[in-house]
Image (cartoon, rainbow, N blue to C red):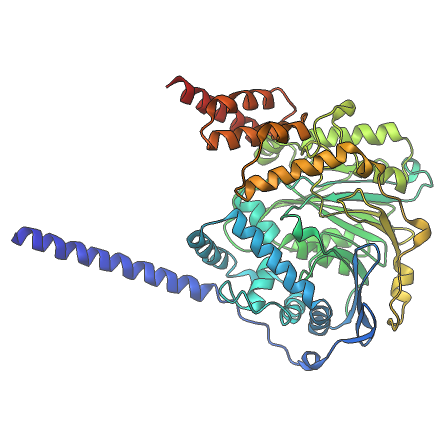
Amino acid sequence: MLKRSKFLRRLLRVLAVIVLLFGLLFAYLVWVSDIPEPKIKDTAALQLQRQQPDTGLYTIGNNWFRKSSSGLYELYVEGAPFERGVINGKLSKELVQLQEDYFSAQINKMVPSKFYRHFLKYFIGFFNRKLPDYVAEEFKEEIYGVSRSASDHYGYIGDKYQRILNYHSAHDIGHALQNLALVGCTSFGTWGAASEDSTMIIGRNFDFYVGDDFAKNKIIAFVNPSGGYKFMSVTWGGFTGVVSGMNEKGLTVTINAAKSSYPTGAATPVSLVAREIVQYAKNIHEAVAIAQKRKMFVSESFLVGSAADNKAVIIEKTPDSLAIYDPHKNEILCTNHFQSGAFWNSEPNKEMREKSSSVYRYNRLNQLLTANGKNSVQKTIEILRDYRGLNNADIGLGNEKAVNQFIAHHSIVFEPQQLRVWVSTTPWQLGPFVCYDLKKVFALQGMKQNREINEVQYAIPADPFIYTPEFRRFETFRNYRAAILDGKKINTDSLVAENPTLYNSYIIAGDYTFKNKDYKKAIPYYQKALTLEIANHGEREHAEAMLKKAQQKIAR
């Protein structure tokens, strides 16, 4: 009895020490996760109030915000960093808060465990504890200004500034933690003899998917900063970084994820590197200099088009080094693998080429460009909308190997010499492309009446495909897929019938029936998936492993 009593006391002491250590660790994580707010000398902008001079139009001085009949929101802001951030937030307050609602809801779906989400919060806080050290003071002040309009409902995640700043590295963290680079963006450009009128054309699909709701409210932002060049970008509420943008000098920047090793600490978010380039570079040389001086914790390709240089190059950047890919011809193509000699045979890049959809999509892009002859804006958009495989093969709608994967947040086309830009409208890149002339937009002296600012005569009509029975079946397929994620019961035979040539239809059906212990029905689904064009090595391995498990279950 005495021995047992001593054992229990010893066990309690050990448990007490463990609890204390976890408590200290938790306190430490809370402490290091606390990001200090920037010190603002002049906070007078906080007193500004938005006005509504016309229905659907909001203004603060020369700054304005409206929703176009195209469904796109349009925002113009000017001034010093903190001031324009505050104005941005006040004008688009509803979208800033709604975007966080959508983002949070998607995270809850992806990470249903409340305990794990709580842990993830502090992990990201710890990971990003030194993030402010890698963000330019100007951008910290602007983000802080925007954050004043953030929601009051997410204090349990962090304070407003901490949250909005961390959201700027969401792409990087998701890319790094899942070792992704599988947000399969596609971009390309032509100029000189490769273009019909010899001028430069840059096109890209931004295939960044955080749920359908996240892509609902796209903002076309026109920014006139107190320092640097005026520029436009496609963004969303609360986000001041750049993923697709062009400045008044005709310099364009788009980003494509590449294969990364696991990061060891905070660095400059990719979107803020792109933002600095589009705000402060007027040519390729200056863009490279900016990219060179910034440390990043993921690998990325920056396709930079320059009216001044009359060409485009790809800045390939890893956490450790940088290389420039110049094709030395009148066209450039970019998917998700590096092309420079410096990185071509690196282990991460070889794995990306061998195991992802990147090379297949690159070859399809090259095939389409070759078949189309001299390029034009119309042809560029047709390529960005293409959903077929190599040699026009039917690989199913939504296949990651296609240029159009039906997940694009936006699709965009630039004409740098003319300072014109075309932006897609829903659904995905199949709706009309709306054209803006940067010279005209930046010549506006404020806005007193709500009116359209896009160039109607240059609009590109919707793709007729959206009116076909095939497209309606694809929408039904997505509804089935969403129902599964929501825990609802579905008929798997009906699901695959709506998208019968897509391998993922059968993997989804197989996973659903396996989960419901109908192993006999799961087997032919996995077998069928393995006969189709599977997008990447990971999904093929998954189908093979699940087929084996189902067969073993039947054999018992």
